[in-house]
Length: 486
Image (cartoon, rainbow, N blue to C red; front, side):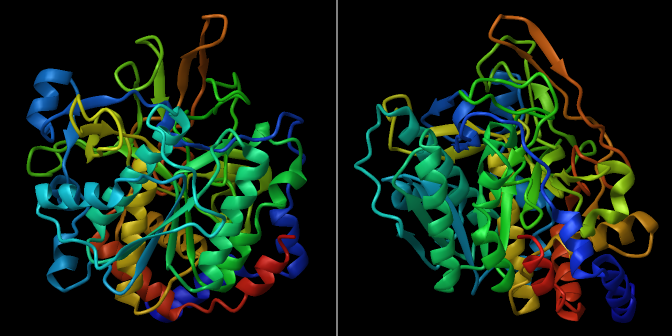
């Protein structure tokens, strides 16, 4: 185990630099002129696979859907959470904040049934607030509302799977992803409200908009106030890296740019970007093969031809330059902010069960879901547990996360990092003219890469190591870092 003094010295090296240097590192380059960015829940493009009267298990999915699928106990096993639970580390005393438009009118009862089915405890509290105004009445025929309700359900149920002792705060806004001009500021306002009123410890964002769909650089910079606020209040902010691999959706939210693009807010250096991996588990949750970067045929889960793919988002930002915490991986990211930072389960061939009753109840309330919409709430649960282990908020994770990754790569520590070295995140899709287009991806390699970040985690070791680093590190430079971002 590396000493506290060594941790402190290495982190200091990562963060060393004048205010001017940090400002240069985080300056934003001009974005391409385009229509106003449209925010969307990443789950919205998924096909609704399921509608069953029972929760499908791995055997059912393999035999009937030719796909893997998983239930809570399997992911708890895969991420080695049992030793933490045995010592009372389950997120208790911490609050996970889920931010979505509209929310779900049935989330309280749906989570209760989900918990009863999988023998999970009820969370200490599940509260819903709407600081920007109450959402309109739920309309099950409104695709925007249904998409956000699905996202809400996934986020709440699966963050709770990882951290069953944590409180959950559901924050809803009254606009949809098609109302970007109004919708973005309302989400920023709501997140600032949570931070200013000390309501949560980690914020999970399973939504995004392609950077290239914003009209200019300043339109993104104007939306960063909540992330800077979170930095000063030691609130961790997470963002799903996207489900379109090395590209992302067009301004009309159809697939996709024929070139490599990135997704915001995941691309913001103040956000920890969460990518997706594919787990290969047996019925008990034991790994039968190494994790790989998520990149699988999407015909069963996403609209499109059977040859089209869906994959974990990742690549260089076209807005943000390389931040100081990525100097150690500049050979990978070049001069840009690279994403993701770390990854969790997200593959569609390895989808997870979730339960909702707000729509399609005649078909059955059990469904399967996948994507980095799953990955972000899973990691939110990890953060809640790490905060509990540390006895305080760990806040902005990226410098510590990159230190752990670099120590792991050098064989000097970095306990809990599980390197992912298989796969890539290319995307093959049908464009508007029905042409098959392939956008090259980034390979998963030893160490950091733009398919899986640093890989994934062994939660038992990772939470303890992250907590230890958080306790011992000098974070006094963060205030000047944040000030330099504007």
